[in-house]
Image (cartoon, rainbow, N blue to C red; front, side, top):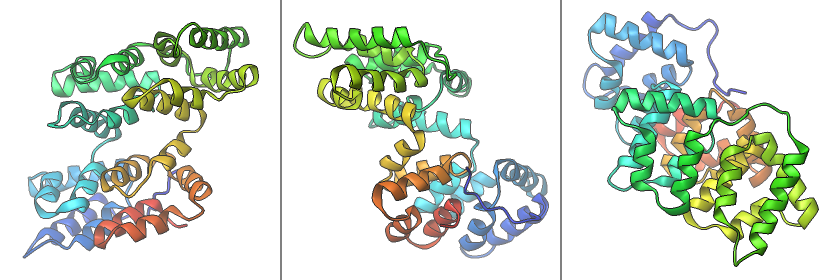
Length: 308
């Protein structure tokens, strides 16, 4: 469900590298040429262009983009030129070790990924930064949020569609009972269920809980949890139900969010995200981006979104 539009036939990596080099020459940079090329090439093509650029001119294309571009266009294009894994780990690293930690961004990456993907992220994070992601999370997060994130990082969850109806009923009763014994639900129960159960299980549990007790899990989370803990639980549940709707709901006018979601999902499920955005807000996502952005930055994002 990618929205990326690639010309057919696409120019060779050498042709693209040559055109980019010309765009960088002289006073200033011809950003329109850069955007027109790179916003219409897939990941393997972009990688080939980078290799060809270094072969031809003996310097790194990303460094040239960094020195020639500015502002949000620079941020968006540099993120676009990274591999999906590089995007995840660099964004996580900044979120958990930056001057001002942004733990909601860490939630958005970790809690939206499958356990197999999380294993790959942890390995790449360790290799790249010589640090353990769990340690960085532990140093910045606190309380129930920290316990949930560490459990979610360390637990291998089943990723298939099969569910255990008996276990679902047990989980629903356990959650309900833990909430009746004292003021508020036992957070340890929420942490265990949300970190250990599959997405299919959580969707079925949501339906069962509502049928048995007349409340949606979403509303239970809203009532029982706060802050980053609530945000992480909600992210896990929303991505179990409908990842595309989760991303569509989170899209606002903040440039960092627009860049992160559009760049990271353009080659994955952006068509579905556009459809969910239209359902939620009764207007095309492209129109919203157009009204909130300017110049080649606007052109770049809209190019990644494809046609309405």
